[in-house]
Amino acid sequence: MKELVILSGKGGTGKTSLTASFATLAAGSMLCDADVDAADLHLLMQPDIQEQTDFQGGGVAVIDPQRCTGCGTCIDMCRFSAISPDFVVDEIGCEGCGVCVDFCPEQAIDFPVRTCGQWFVSDTRFGPMVHARLGIAEENSGKLVTLVRQQAKQLAEARGLDLILTDGPPGVGCPVIASVGGATSVVIVAEPTVSGIHDMARAIELCRFFKVPVMVCINKFDLNPDNSATIEQMARDQGVPVVGRVPFDAAFTRAMVQGKTLLEYDGNGAAGNHLRQVWAAIMQTSAMTAEH
Image (cartoon, rainbow, N blue to C red; front, side, top):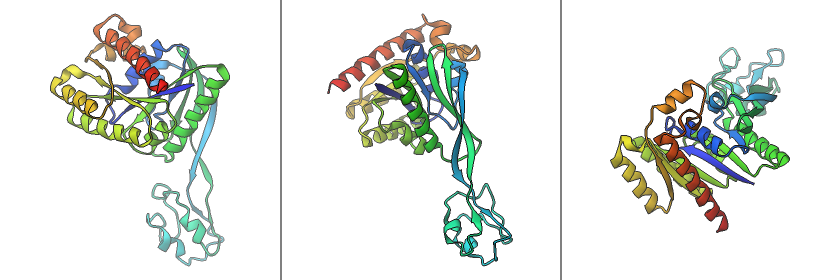
């Protein structure tokens, strides 16, 4: 079984739109939306939810006034200043580290685990999909990413599917780290902007650290040909294959409004033809990497 993770060093590069189009070309594969903080692949996949399970993340300290003697140890120990002088914990300020729980001499602080999101197993027109929804301002997104990927792998094994297509989170933080480890290969969707170039370099560095083969696809390359050329040169210098360039096309937005992938909406347009070429290059590069 292989897992192809689609990443972007920054948000707004068109990563999810490209992933959705790749899903049409890899119909029958396992789909996984690991962008749990701002999941939106479901908007195009229109999943029919079959299973829903609560996700329980970290806890928030709760001081029991009946047991509390007001010694002030918790206030002194809390580096986030989340405990008021009258010994009430600010749920937003509490980072869930549990230090106050460990050091309270009266054991007057409880630390209940909270339900902070849900994860789902769904059917889509392109195959089964595992996805999730993290609550607003909730923590532990990396833990939820790991859970979603594990469930996707188990379901793929149970159904005999040999490819997991994962829409990863943007950036290079904890959720991205959780989406890269153990992947077969990664495609970084880069845009030809200064920030896009910078963040692509950081994403490549992250993949190299985890020893995961990485490729680059340039989206909206024609908006700034000079920056696109810079991306290609940077990739060549680091031995990273560029699997293709996709032009800017307003059809992406029109397709999104109708809840369709670009290939469903305008599969014979310029962008659609480029996407097919990119997917073929990804499959060829992945196969060559696997041989080595």
